[in-house]
Image (cartoon, rainbow, N blue to C red; front, top):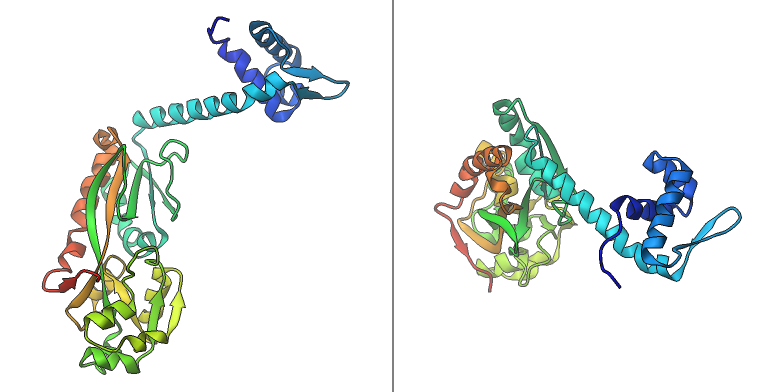
Length: 311
């Protein structure tokens, strides 16, 4: 049997008709007449040498051959559409779509994006805050800022920032703290965004590293999102084991203070990621250069700190 592919228009007609289970609805989607769509499907069936649909009085249903063909046809058109969209983005530098985690977007990226926008008035920025690892082609994303242990095979990936944590609180609360042991008398704020790590960089780990009884870590309020935990600390009602990336602006402004030089390394880090070759696109390159310069003060927060690895 020859393996020459049938006409693409015939396959497209079949995929639409099988998805709708209606020749009329498929014809409307493809902006052709039902007769023209029926002709394309008959052409495909002739090419195969077997029927793909059973024509009923007011409906159609797939034959065994149709059910066999449909998944591959749908996957093929999905991939073709994704490849076409990705190729279009290579020639379109007026729109840049960026994805990053919700906490990093809220506390680091969004407050600074106006500077990039002011310097690049010709570019429309779209930011998607999500913990889901997005597919660059399917989700129409140009750049990702990802946090974790880093497994970016087949992608262009550059190191941005190592993450570390240390106790942070408002200045009024810090005035009551002289040693790590004093933290036991204060409300501790827990956040579980780093729960995927083993061992975890949590309050118990920090207290152990400071030589303090870790039983103090048993109390306090828990948050699933790191930025919510930071917001509670900003209200002055507790001490958060703050992440450098999310608290750098508050440390710089004095709204939060980190009274101890001891910090825990999270082992995880932020990376700038895009498809291989996309780093050369003018829009991506401009954003990458801005990001690398903008994150330098956040990196500098580690200077003079005793950042210890987790046991």
